[in-house]
Image 1 (spheres, helix red, strand yellow):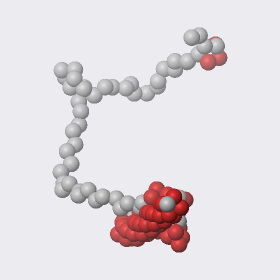
Image 2 (cartoon, one colour):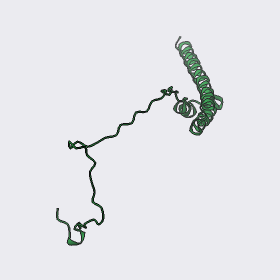
Image 3 (cartoon, one colour):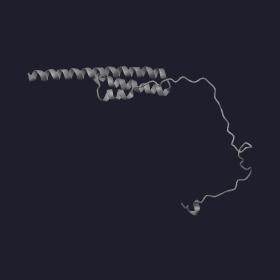
Length: 127
């Protein structure tokens, strides 16, 4: 690929000291090795905020606005995690999980009772 003459690279000789490579007498380059000695830090699991579950609870089944409360506590948990308050994030995450469990239980119970009721009605009408 040819470049226009105005964009040709220019070679300018350097003034002053020349660049010298640091090598050992045998020609191999020298490397410095640093070894850090210390106690390994324990891996602390990040608290879960259950934001996806909370959003599904809000959008798909939201009895008594419990899905909205779950989203609220999930967002608070995520905010606490970003600030660095892992214990506060863990507590808000547990609260969001509890609201999600109650929401899911109410929805499953409601759908089950609705299905049983419709089944009984259809059975009565058929006989």
